[in-house]
Picture: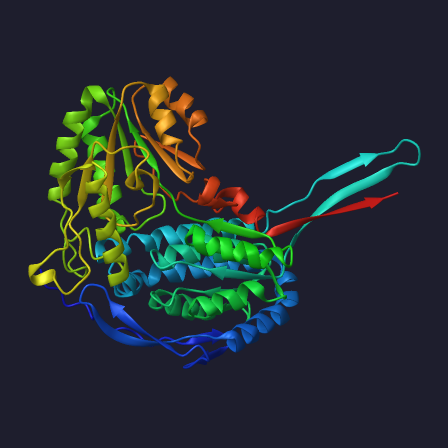
Length: 486
Protein backbone atom coordinates (compact mmCIF):
# COMPACT_ATOMS: atom_id res chain seq x y z
CA UNK A 1 0.00 0.00 0.00
CA UNK A 2 1.58 3.28 -1.12
CA UNK A 3 1.01 6.34 1.03
CA UNK A 4 1.36 10.04 0.25
CA UNK A 5 3.33 10.85 3.42
CA UNK A 6 6.31 13.13 2.79
CA UNK A 7 9.49 11.06 3.11
CA UNK A 8 11.90 13.99 2.96
CA UNK A 9 14.18 14.08 6.02
CA UNK A 10 14.15 17.41 7.90
CA UNK A 11 17.27 19.48 8.48
CA UNK A 12 19.14 18.77 11.71
CA UNK A 13 21.05 21.29 13.84
CA UNK A 14 23.02 21.40 17.07
CA UNK A 15 20.96 23.17 19.77
CA UNK A 16 22.94 25.17 22.33
CA UNK A 17 20.99 27.73 24.29
CA UNK A 18 18.98 29.67 21.74
CA UNK A 19 21.39 28.90 18.91
CA UNK A 20 20.97 26.46 16.03
CA UNK A 21 24.32 25.40 14.62
CA UNK A 22 24.35 23.83 11.17
CA UNK A 23 27.79 22.29 11.59
CA UNK A 24 29.96 20.89 14.35
CA UNK A 25 33.54 19.93 14.99
CA UNK A 26 32.57 16.25 14.99
CA UNK A 27 32.08 16.33 11.22
CA UNK A 28 29.00 14.81 9.60
CA UNK A 29 27.21 11.48 9.54
CA UNK A 30 25.52 10.09 6.46
CA UNK A 31 22.12 8.98 7.71
CA UNK A 32 21.05 5.74 6.04
CA UNK A 33 17.39 4.90 5.50
CA UNK A 34 17.26 1.28 6.69
CA UNK A 35 14.27 0.55 4.45
CA UNK A 36 16.29 1.33 1.32
CA UNK A 37 19.93 1.09 2.36
CA UNK A 38 20.52 4.57 0.87
CA UNK A 39 22.00 7.68 2.49
CA UNK A 40 19.21 10.24 2.74
CA UNK A 41 20.70 13.07 4.84
CA UNK A 42 23.97 14.49 6.18
CA UNK A 43 23.81 15.02 9.94
CA UNK A 44 26.09 17.57 11.65
CA UNK A 45 27.87 16.10 14.64
CA UNK A 46 28.99 17.77 17.83
CA UNK A 47 32.58 17.44 18.91
CA UNK A 48 34.26 18.20 22.22
CA UNK A 49 34.10 21.97 21.68
CA UNK A 50 30.33 22.02 21.15
CA UNK A 51 29.83 19.71 24.13
CA UNK A 52 31.83 22.09 26.31
CA UNK A 53 29.84 25.07 25.02
CA UNK A 54 26.54 23.30 25.71
CA UNK A 55 27.55 22.23 29.22
CA UNK A 56 28.77 25.75 30.04
CA UNK A 57 25.45 27.12 28.74
CA UNK A 58 23.43 24.63 30.79
CA UNK A 59 25.53 25.42 33.86
CA UNK A 60 24.89 29.15 33.44
CA UNK A 61 21.15 28.50 33.09
CA UNK A 62 20.96 26.23 36.13
CA UNK A 63 20.75 28.81 38.91
CA UNK A 64 17.82 30.59 37.28
CA UNK A 65 16.03 27.33 36.48
CA UNK A 66 16.41 25.83 39.96
CA UNK A 67 14.92 29.06 41.39
CA UNK A 68 12.01 29.02 38.95
CA UNK A 69 8.85 28.38 40.99
CA UNK A 70 7.90 24.70 40.80
CA UNK A 71 4.43 25.64 39.57
CA UNK A 72 6.04 27.39 36.59
CA UNK A 73 8.19 24.35 35.82
CA UNK A 74 5.00 22.30 35.93
CA UNK A 75 3.23 24.70 33.58
CA UNK A 76 6.04 24.60 31.03
CA UNK A 77 6.19 20.81 31.07
CA UNK A 78 2.41 20.60 30.67
CA UNK A 79 2.68 22.92 27.69
CA UNK A 80 5.41 20.71 26.22
CA UNK A 81 3.18 17.65 26.63
CA UNK A 82 0.36 19.42 24.79
CA UNK A 83 2.75 20.31 21.96
CA UNK A 84 3.89 16.69 21.69
CA UNK A 85 0.27 15.67 21.18
CA UNK A 86 -0.35 18.47 18.69
CA UNK A 87 2.62 17.32 16.61
CA UNK A 88 1.81 13.61 16.76
CA UNK A 89 1.65 13.09 13.01
CA UNK A 90 5.02 14.75 12.43
CA UNK A 91 6.65 12.78 15.26
CA UNK A 92 5.29 9.57 13.75
CA UNK A 93 6.74 10.56 10.37
CA UNK A 94 10.12 11.44 11.85
CA UNK A 95 10.22 8.29 13.95
CA UNK A 96 9.84 6.27 10.77
CA UNK A 97 12.52 8.32 9.01
CA UNK A 98 14.83 7.93 12.00
CA UNK A 99 15.17 4.15 12.07
CA UNK A 100 12.54 2.51 9.88
CA UNK A 101 10.05 1.89 12.68
CA UNK A 102 6.66 1.39 10.96
CA UNK A 103 4.49 4.46 11.22
CA UNK A 104 1.80 2.37 12.88
CA UNK A 105 4.26 1.79 15.74
CA UNK A 106 6.15 5.10 15.86
CA UNK A 107 2.84 6.95 16.16
CA UNK A 108 2.04 5.02 19.32
CA UNK A 109 5.09 6.42 21.10
CA UNK A 110 3.80 10.01 20.89
CA UNK A 111 0.88 9.81 23.36
CA UNK A 112 3.06 7.67 25.63
CA UNK A 113 5.78 10.33 25.55
CA UNK A 114 3.23 13.05 26.30
CA UNK A 115 2.00 11.00 29.26
CA UNK A 116 5.53 10.67 30.67
CA UNK A 117 5.93 14.44 30.32
CA UNK A 118 2.64 15.20 32.09
CA UNK A 119 3.41 12.74 34.87
CA UNK A 120 6.67 14.44 35.75
CA UNK A 121 5.14 17.88 35.33
CA UNK A 122 2.90 16.82 38.19
CA UNK A 123 5.91 16.01 40.36
CA UNK A 124 7.52 19.44 39.90
CA UNK A 125 5.75 20.96 42.93
CA UNK A 126 5.41 17.80 45.03
CA UNK A 127 8.93 16.90 46.08
CA UNK A 128 9.39 17.24 49.82
CA UNK A 129 11.82 16.41 52.58
CA UNK A 130 11.50 14.84 56.03
CA UNK A 131 11.19 16.57 59.40
CA UNK A 132 12.45 15.30 62.73
CA UNK A 133 12.38 16.97 66.13
CA UNK A 134 13.83 16.19 69.55
CA UNK A 135 13.37 18.70 72.36
CA UNK A 136 15.10 16.97 75.28
CA UNK A 137 18.56 18.06 76.46
CA UNK A 138 18.57 21.21 74.38
CA UNK A 139 16.81 19.60 71.45
CA UNK A 140 17.24 19.77 67.72
CA UNK A 141 15.06 20.42 64.72
CA UNK A 142 16.17 18.41 61.73
CA UNK A 143 14.93 18.37 58.16
CA UNK A 144 16.04 17.36 54.70
CA UNK A 145 16.11 19.32 51.46
CA UNK A 146 15.74 17.52 48.11
CA UNK A 147 17.85 19.54 45.70
CA UNK A 148 18.69 19.26 41.98
CA UNK A 149 22.15 18.18 40.93
CA UNK A 150 22.87 20.81 38.28
CA UNK A 151 23.73 19.82 34.71
CA UNK A 152 22.59 16.33 33.76
CA UNK A 153 24.27 14.59 30.82
CA UNK A 154 21.73 12.51 28.88
CA UNK A 155 22.74 9.95 26.25
CA UNK A 156 19.95 8.11 24.47
CA UNK A 157 19.94 5.19 22.10
CA UNK A 158 18.47 4.86 18.62
CA UNK A 159 15.58 2.39 18.96
CA UNK A 160 13.05 4.78 20.52
CA UNK A 161 14.34 8.33 20.05
CA UNK A 162 11.21 10.17 21.27
CA UNK A 163 10.21 7.95 24.19
CA UNK A 164 13.84 7.86 25.36
CA UNK A 165 13.79 11.67 25.57
CA UNK A 166 10.46 11.61 27.43
CA UNK A 167 11.72 9.06 29.96
CA UNK A 168 14.64 11.28 30.95
CA UNK A 169 14.25 14.97 30.16
CA UNK A 170 10.91 15.83 31.91
CA UNK A 171 11.94 14.22 35.21
CA UNK A 172 15.30 16.01 35.20
CA UNK A 173 13.65 19.37 34.43
CA UNK A 174 10.84 18.90 36.96
CA UNK A 175 13.49 18.39 39.64
CA UNK A 176 15.17 21.69 38.69
CA UNK A 177 18.14 20.43 36.69
CA UNK A 178 19.30 21.59 33.28
CA UNK A 179 20.26 19.07 30.62
CA UNK A 180 22.61 18.41 27.73
CA UNK A 181 21.26 15.62 25.53
CA UNK A 182 23.22 13.56 23.02
CA UNK A 183 20.83 11.61 20.79
CA UNK A 184 22.25 8.93 18.56
CA UNK A 185 23.56 10.10 15.22
CA UNK A 186 21.55 7.21 13.73
CA UNK A 187 18.22 8.82 14.76
CA UNK A 188 18.45 12.63 14.82
CA UNK A 189 15.09 13.73 13.38
CA UNK A 190 12.77 13.26 16.35
CA UNK A 191 15.16 15.11 18.66
CA UNK A 192 15.22 18.13 16.35
CA UNK A 193 11.45 18.52 16.61
CA UNK A 194 11.56 17.92 20.37
CA UNK A 195 14.04 20.78 20.72
CA UNK A 196 11.79 23.02 18.61
CA UNK A 197 8.86 22.30 20.92
CA UNK A 198 10.91 22.94 24.06
CA UNK A 199 11.62 26.40 22.67
CA UNK A 200 7.99 26.89 21.62
CA UNK A 201 6.77 25.88 25.09
CA UNK A 202 8.75 28.77 26.57
CA UNK A 203 11.58 27.08 28.46
CA UNK A 204 14.44 29.51 29.15
CA UNK A 205 17.37 29.26 26.73
CA UNK A 206 20.06 26.89 27.97
CA UNK A 207 17.81 24.70 30.09
CA UNK A 208 17.67 22.05 27.34
CA UNK A 209 20.56 21.62 24.90
CA UNK A 210 20.60 18.91 22.26
CA UNK A 211 23.65 17.74 20.31
CA UNK A 212 23.61 14.83 17.87
CA UNK A 213 27.02 13.23 18.02
CA UNK A 214 29.13 10.14 17.67
CA UNK A 215 30.56 8.22 20.67
CA UNK A 216 33.37 10.78 21.01
CA UNK A 217 30.79 13.47 21.86
CA UNK A 218 29.23 11.16 24.42
CA UNK A 219 32.61 10.59 26.04
CA UNK A 220 33.22 14.36 26.24
CA UNK A 221 29.82 14.84 27.87
CA UNK A 222 30.37 12.09 30.44
CA UNK A 223 33.83 13.36 31.35
CA UNK A 224 32.94 17.05 31.61
CA UNK A 225 33.54 18.25 35.20
CA UNK A 226 30.40 20.44 35.21
CA UNK A 227 28.15 17.47 34.41
CA UNK A 228 26.91 16.33 37.81
CA UNK A 229 25.13 13.12 36.81
CA UNK A 230 24.82 10.95 33.70
CA UNK A 231 21.81 9.01 32.51
CA UNK A 232 22.34 6.60 29.63
CA UNK A 233 20.23 4.19 27.63
CA UNK A 234 22.15 1.65 25.57
CA UNK A 235 24.22 -1.48 25.91
CA UNK A 236 26.43 -2.88 28.69
CA UNK A 237 29.67 -2.43 26.72
CA UNK A 238 29.21 1.35 26.44
CA UNK A 239 27.89 1.51 30.00
CA UNK A 240 31.12 0.02 31.33
CA UNK A 241 33.07 2.81 29.62
CA UNK A 242 30.72 5.39 31.14
CA UNK A 243 31.13 3.88 34.62
CA UNK A 244 34.90 3.92 34.25
CA UNK A 245 34.87 7.59 33.23
CA UNK A 246 32.43 8.59 35.98
CA UNK A 247 34.48 6.76 38.61
CA UNK A 248 37.27 9.31 38.16
CA UNK A 249 34.96 12.04 39.49
CA UNK A 250 32.69 9.85 41.69
CA UNK A 251 29.88 10.90 39.37
CA UNK A 252 26.54 9.09 39.84
CA UNK A 253 24.77 7.39 36.95
CA UNK A 254 21.49 5.94 35.77
CA UNK A 255 22.04 3.11 33.27
CA UNK A 256 19.12 1.58 31.36
CA UNK A 257 20.71 -1.30 29.52
CA UNK A 258 19.89 -4.49 27.69
CA UNK A 259 17.78 -7.49 28.55
CA UNK A 260 17.15 -11.14 27.81
CA UNK A 261 13.68 -11.19 29.27
CA UNK A 262 12.02 -14.52 29.98
CA UNK A 263 8.32 -15.07 29.29
CA UNK A 264 6.98 -17.96 31.40
CA UNK A 265 3.91 -19.60 29.85
CA UNK A 266 2.00 -22.06 32.05
CA UNK A 267 -0.58 -24.57 30.91
CA UNK A 268 -3.42 -22.71 32.64
CA UNK A 269 -2.76 -19.47 30.70
CA UNK A 270 -4.90 -18.11 27.90
CA UNK A 271 -2.63 -19.67 25.29
CA UNK A 272 -4.05 -17.79 22.32
CA UNK A 273 -3.48 -14.44 24.00
CA UNK A 274 -0.08 -15.53 25.34
CA UNK A 275 1.13 -16.60 21.88
CA UNK A 276 -0.11 -13.44 20.21
CA UNK A 277 1.50 -11.27 22.90
CA UNK A 278 4.83 -13.10 22.86
CA UNK A 279 5.16 -13.20 19.09
CA UNK A 280 4.21 -9.63 18.31
CA UNK A 281 6.21 -8.26 21.25
CA UNK A 282 9.41 -10.17 20.47
CA UNK A 283 9.33 -10.23 16.65
CA UNK A 284 7.00 -7.48 15.45
CA UNK A 285 7.47 -4.57 17.84
CA UNK A 286 10.51 -2.57 16.70
CA UNK A 287 11.57 -5.68 14.74
CA UNK A 288 12.78 -7.12 18.04
CA UNK A 289 14.99 -4.09 18.72
CA UNK A 290 13.87 -3.41 22.28
CA UNK A 291 15.66 -4.00 25.56
CA UNK A 292 12.63 -5.18 27.55
CA UNK A 293 11.02 -7.44 24.93
CA UNK A 294 10.18 -11.06 25.90
CA UNK A 295 12.79 -12.71 23.69
CA UNK A 296 12.97 -15.98 25.64
CA UNK A 297 9.74 -17.97 25.83
CA UNK A 298 9.72 -20.70 28.49
CA UNK A 299 6.75 -23.02 28.01
CA UNK A 300 5.25 -25.76 30.16
CA UNK A 301 5.90 -29.07 28.44
CA UNK A 302 2.23 -30.07 28.52
CA UNK A 303 1.41 -27.29 26.03
CA UNK A 304 4.83 -26.89 24.43
CA UNK A 305 4.10 -28.32 20.97
CA UNK A 306 0.83 -26.38 20.76
CA UNK A 307 2.51 -23.12 21.70
CA UNK A 308 5.42 -23.61 19.27
CA UNK A 309 3.02 -24.27 16.40
CA UNK A 310 0.84 -21.29 17.26
CA UNK A 311 3.78 -18.92 17.63
CA UNK A 312 5.17 -20.05 14.27
CA UNK A 313 1.85 -19.39 12.57
CA UNK A 314 1.55 -15.93 14.11
CA UNK A 315 5.16 -15.12 13.14
CA UNK A 316 4.57 -16.10 9.51
CA UNK A 317 1.68 -13.64 9.31
CA UNK A 318 3.34 -10.54 10.78
CA UNK A 319 3.03 -7.84 8.08
CA UNK A 320 6.52 -6.76 6.98
CA UNK A 321 7.38 -4.09 4.46
CA UNK A 322 7.45 -0.38 3.72
CA UNK A 323 7.41 1.32 7.14
CA UNK A 324 5.29 4.18 5.78
CA UNK A 325 2.50 1.72 4.95
CA UNK A 326 0.04 1.95 7.88
CA UNK A 327 -0.81 -1.76 7.58
CA UNK A 328 2.78 -2.81 8.28
CA UNK A 329 3.79 -3.98 11.77
CA UNK A 330 7.45 -4.89 11.30
CA UNK A 331 10.12 -2.94 9.44
CA UNK A 332 13.86 -3.27 8.86
CA UNK A 333 16.57 -3.48 11.50
CA UNK A 334 18.56 -0.31 11.98
CA UNK A 335 21.59 -0.86 9.73
CA UNK A 336 23.65 -3.37 7.79
CA UNK A 337 25.96 -4.09 10.72
CA UNK A 338 22.96 -5.10 12.83
CA UNK A 339 21.63 -7.26 10.02
CA UNK A 340 24.90 -9.14 9.64
CA UNK A 341 25.30 -9.55 13.41
CA UNK A 342 21.79 -11.03 13.77
CA UNK A 343 22.26 -13.38 10.80
CA UNK A 344 25.49 -14.59 12.41
CA UNK A 345 23.67 -15.38 15.64
CA UNK A 346 20.99 -17.27 13.69
CA UNK A 347 23.60 -19.44 12.00
CA UNK A 348 25.35 -20.18 15.29
CA UNK A 349 22.03 -21.08 16.93
CA UNK A 350 21.53 -23.77 14.27
CA UNK A 351 25.00 -25.16 15.02
CA UNK A 352 24.17 -25.16 18.75
CA UNK A 353 21.29 -27.53 18.09
CA UNK A 354 18.32 -25.16 18.26
CA UNK A 355 15.45 -26.13 15.92
CA UNK A 356 14.60 -23.42 13.39
CA UNK A 357 10.81 -23.34 13.21
CA UNK A 358 10.33 -20.42 10.85
CA UNK A 359 12.27 -17.52 9.35
CA UNK A 360 16.02 -17.21 9.61
CA UNK A 361 16.87 -15.35 6.41
CA UNK A 362 17.17 -11.88 4.94
CA UNK A 363 14.16 -10.86 2.88
CA UNK A 364 14.68 -10.66 -0.86
CA UNK A 365 12.54 -9.35 -3.71
CA UNK A 366 11.26 -5.77 -3.40
CA UNK A 367 12.72 -5.46 0.13
CA UNK A 368 16.20 -6.74 -0.76
CA UNK A 369 17.88 -3.33 -0.61
CA UNK A 370 16.69 -2.68 2.94
CA UNK A 371 17.79 -4.38 6.15
CA UNK A 372 14.83 -6.73 6.48
CA UNK A 373 14.85 -10.06 8.30
CA UNK A 374 12.20 -12.72 8.43
CA UNK A 375 10.58 -13.05 11.89
CA UNK A 376 12.56 -15.99 13.24
CA UNK A 377 11.50 -18.61 15.78
CA UNK A 378 13.76 -21.24 17.31
CA UNK A 379 12.48 -24.09 19.48
CA UNK A 380 14.32 -26.53 21.77
CA UNK A 381 16.82 -23.82 22.67
CA UNK A 382 19.45 -24.85 25.21
CA UNK A 383 19.19 -22.42 28.16
CA UNK A 384 23.00 -22.09 28.24
CA UNK A 385 23.45 -21.44 24.51
CA UNK A 386 24.40 -18.11 23.01
CA UNK A 387 20.86 -17.56 21.75
CA UNK A 388 19.47 -17.96 25.26
CA UNK A 389 22.19 -15.96 27.00
CA UNK A 390 22.94 -13.05 24.65
CA UNK A 391 20.70 -10.16 23.63
CA UNK A 392 19.96 -10.44 19.90
CA UNK A 393 18.26 -7.06 19.41
CA UNK A 394 16.50 -8.35 16.34
CA UNK A 395 13.42 -10.37 15.36
CA UNK A 396 14.48 -13.70 16.87
CA UNK A 397 12.51 -15.61 19.53
CA UNK A 398 13.98 -18.52 21.51
CA UNK A 399 11.56 -21.12 22.93
CA UNK A 400 12.54 -23.61 25.66
CA UNK A 401 10.36 -26.17 27.49
CA UNK A 402 10.17 -26.63 31.26
CA UNK A 403 8.66 -29.32 33.47
CA UNK A 404 8.15 -27.56 36.82
CA UNK A 405 7.69 -24.04 38.10
CA UNK A 406 11.01 -24.30 39.91
CA UNK A 407 12.78 -25.24 36.69
CA UNK A 408 11.15 -22.34 34.86
CA UNK A 409 12.38 -19.88 37.48
CA UNK A 410 15.87 -21.36 37.41
CA UNK A 411 16.06 -21.03 33.60
CA UNK A 412 14.62 -17.50 33.69
CA UNK A 413 17.18 -16.36 36.27
CA UNK A 414 20.16 -18.06 34.59
CA UNK A 415 21.39 -15.08 32.58
CA UNK A 416 23.43 -12.04 33.66
CA UNK A 417 20.54 -9.78 32.58
CA UNK A 418 17.63 -8.75 34.77
CA UNK A 419 15.51 -6.08 33.10
CA UNK A 420 12.00 -7.51 32.64
CA UNK A 421 10.20 -10.80 33.12
CA UNK A 422 6.79 -11.93 31.91
CA UNK A 423 4.35 -14.45 33.35
CA UNK A 424 1.31 -15.96 31.64
CA UNK A 425 -0.96 -17.76 34.11
CA UNK A 426 -4.48 -17.68 35.53
CA UNK A 427 -3.24 -18.77 38.96
CA UNK A 428 -3.08 -15.58 41.06
CA UNK A 429 -1.01 -17.21 43.80
CA UNK A 430 1.53 -18.36 41.23
CA UNK A 431 1.70 -14.87 39.71
CA UNK A 432 2.52 -13.30 43.09
CA UNK A 433 4.97 -16.06 43.94
CA UNK A 434 6.86 -15.66 40.68
CA UNK A 435 6.88 -11.87 40.96
CA UNK A 436 8.99 -12.32 44.07
CA UNK A 437 11.24 -15.07 42.73
CA UNK A 438 12.12 -13.75 39.29
CA UNK A 439 15.34 -11.71 39.22
CA UNK A 440 14.26 -8.70 37.18
CA UNK A 441 13.51 -5.04 37.63
CA UNK A 442 9.89 -5.61 36.65
CA UNK A 443 7.52 -8.55 36.28
CA UNK A 444 4.57 -8.17 33.89
CA UNK A 445 1.68 -10.61 34.20
CA UNK A 446 -0.80 -11.57 31.46
CA UNK A 447 0.01 -8.78 29.04
CA UNK A 448 0.49 -5.85 31.42
CA UNK A 449 1.87 -2.92 29.42
CA UNK A 450 5.54 -1.97 29.24
CA UNK A 451 6.76 1.53 30.12
CA UNK A 452 3.80 2.59 32.26
CA UNK A 453 5.05 5.87 33.70
CA UNK A 454 3.70 5.28 37.20
CA UNK A 455 5.90 2.17 37.61
CA UNK A 456 9.66 2.36 38.13
CA UNK A 457 11.54 0.85 35.17
CA UNK A 458 15.12 -0.32 35.40
CA UNK A 459 17.08 -3.52 35.71
CA UNK A 460 19.49 -5.50 37.84
CA UNK A 461 22.70 -7.26 36.86
CA UNK A 462 24.04 -6.09 33.50
CA UNK A 463 20.62 -4.64 32.70
CA UNK A 464 21.49 -1.48 34.56
CA UNK A 465 21.47 0.77 37.60
CA UNK A 466 18.76 3.19 38.73
CA UNK A 467 15.16 3.78 37.74
CA UNK A 468 13.04 5.70 35.27
CA UNK A 469 9.33 6.10 35.95
CA UNK A 470 7.32 6.53 39.12
CA UNK A 471 8.44 8.52 42.12
CA UNK A 472 11.79 6.77 41.89
CA UNK A 473 12.30 8.40 38.49
CA UNK A 474 12.32 11.95 39.82
CA UNK A 475 14.28 10.97 42.92
CA UNK A 476 17.14 9.97 40.59
CA UNK A 477 17.52 13.68 39.76
CA UNK A 478 17.44 14.95 43.35
CA UNK A 479 20.09 14.67 46.07
CA UNK A 480 19.28 14.99 49.73
CA UNK A 481 20.77 17.62 52.02
CA UNK A 482 20.30 17.24 55.76
CA UNK A 483 19.86 20.29 58.04
CA UNK A 484 20.02 20.30 61.83
CA UNK A 485 19.19 23.29 64.07
CA UNK A 486 20.14 23.15 67.75
